[in-house]
Length: 468
Image (cartoon, rainbow, N blue to C red; front, side, top):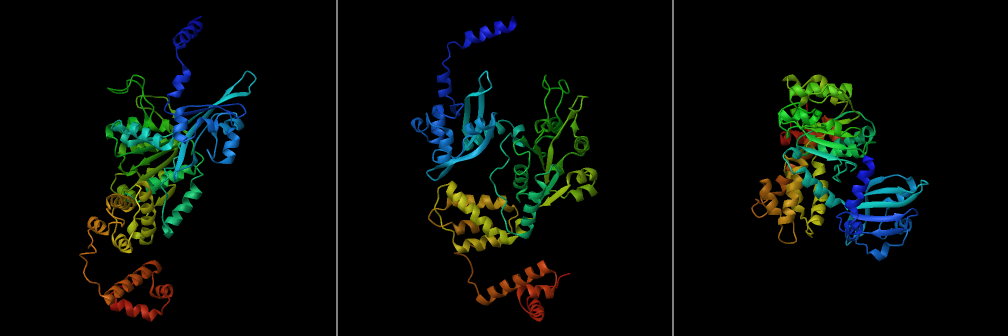
C-alpha cells in the first residue's frame, strides 16, 4: 500500500513537467536511437558539441554514419546494440577546423517485455569540458587538492613519456611487461622527471584501465587527517566525524588502482597500517572493527631516497620491499642530455598549437636548452617553453628571454667565440662522455673510432682524469 501511495505521489509531482524541455536544456549531449540504431532524437547540446545539425543525423543509422566516418568515427549506441548492455568510454569523434573533437560517452539500453532493445539513450560530454568540471570539483576545497579520483577515464592524461635515452627505453619496456600484471610498483626520481606520467601509463595499459583510479599526494593532506582519508572512518570515530561515516580512498579505489605519491613522507605510524593493508588485502576503518576486503593495485612514487630514510629510521624496510616489487627509477634530465632537444621540439609544437602561435625556433635556442642543467627537469622545461611561446612578440621564439630565464648569456651580450677554443671544448666533452659510457680508454677509443694513444694524448691535453 505504501509503495502504491509513493507511486501516485510521484505521478502527481511529475505530471506538469515537460521532459522534452528538460532534456533540450541539459548541458550534456543526448542521442536516442531505436533498437536497430536509427536516430530518433538529438538535443541541442549534442549538436553544439559535435557540430552536427539535426537533419544530418535524424532518421539515419548510427552504424552507417560511423562506417562513413564523416560525422563521427565511432558510435557508443552501436556498441550498446551489439553487446546489449551499458557501454561507457572515451574516444576520438572527428576533426573540426583542425581541432580533434573527443568525447566521453555513455549508452544505456532500454528493453521491452520480451528482452529486446527498444531504445538506446546515449549521453556525450566534451572531454575538455569534463576535465574543467572535474578540476572545479577537485579545487573546491583544500582537501581535494591532494586527491584525484578518475573513474572509467582510462587514466591516460595524454602526456607522453618522451625520450630516446637507453634508460627511458628500458623504462618503456618495464612498463609494457609490468602493466598487465597486478604487482606493486615503486617509481623514484627527482621532482619533475615524470613519475606521474609513468604511473598513468601503467594504469592505462593495465587490465584495470576502466576501473577507479585514485591519486593521493601524501604530503598535501594534513598528517592528522591522512589516516581517515586513506582508510576511512565509522560514525562517531572522532569529534567532527560525519554521522554516516566515510569510505577511505582505498575503498574508493577498490577493483582499480591507487597512486600513493610522495610515499617517502608518509608518517611512520601510518606506514605500519599501510603495510598491513598490502599484506592482508583488507582495511579496517578508523573506529571500526570489521575488515573490508580489497582488490587494489598499488603504485607508489617518491623523490626521496628511501634507502637513506630506512637508515635514518624514517621509513620501514619491510614496507620498502613490499612496495618495490617492480622498481622504476627515472633519471634526471641533466643525465640524458640527448633527450632535451626532442622534448623541446615536442612541447614547442604542442604549445604553439595550444596558443595559436606560429613561431620559428632559432638554432641558437637549442644551444641554450642543452647548456642548462634543468634542476626542475621536464616540468621546468615545459613551463619555460610555454611561457616564451606566449610572450614572444614576433615570429621568432625569444632566445634572449630564454637566456634571461636560465641565467645564460644572451645572444646580444655574448662574448666573441674563438673557433679553436670551441673545438677544444667540444672535443673534451666528447671524450668525457665516451669514457663515462664505456668505462675505459680502449673502449672509448673504439667508440669514437680512434686509437687508444689518441685518447690518452687528448686526455692529457684537456686535463681529463682516467675513469676509476
